[in-house]
Length: 345
Image (cartoon, rainbow, N blue to C red; front, side, top):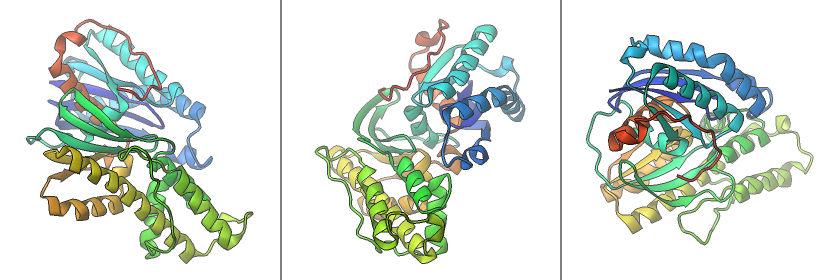
């Protein structure tokens, strides 16, 4: 069964064709990074305009790369949210219109659940449930217990800034540019940064599984100001200072995420542990997680390709396939997809 997935939740216009939930036949993405680097972050109206320009060419590219026509496509999956409403509208309306015209089943896929299925892409293997999943991206951190396809329990989530957002803001503060995750990782590695150079805090919340990074972001600001004054110029910061701060910040984020993941593992004892989402591409996070969980003899998985970590449509199509298999009658009657910023699922 071939699913065409569409993803436009933020600044990536992405379309993919995936067969049987695993085999990625195409994964076309048009990025807006060059545009948003000029403003140091995503401007919703600009992102929405670019989606309108790119959506049809990217659909055509995905079909061509998959050597498929619309006759080969069995269903369409698209993300109605959460995300930027102005960006979601383009993908939702496009998917709804094509599904109506082509008479294809239409499957709305929650963005966070889609990230979970980044681990299914290009993996034709058995997964053992229950699976404990840490999804960590620019807009959200979640700890999810996946009991089966379509059966999810949210056990922890972001209370303020997500890790990816904190990466972006700290990178801007240090003059490293956008997107922040790759910039901070590169800076920490290039300068051989000291991971324990500064006393950065880890948030302590009432829930052992929830996350907070606003205090960490503020602590970085105060630390920089203590060395360079309140009116510091990011371009004039000492290179080694920036490298050490990048390394310490990155390590603190990794430890915070893995600490909560370990607490959840001890409580729920899943058969597998997965890390997904944009920040799952961070090598420091992967290495720290592997170091901690190696002693527990539990499979630890993250997406096989970096392209399946960041926003992409292969994960949407994969998730759509398993949703369809779980309840085909639910999607037999066409209904339009309505965009929403709601993070609940």
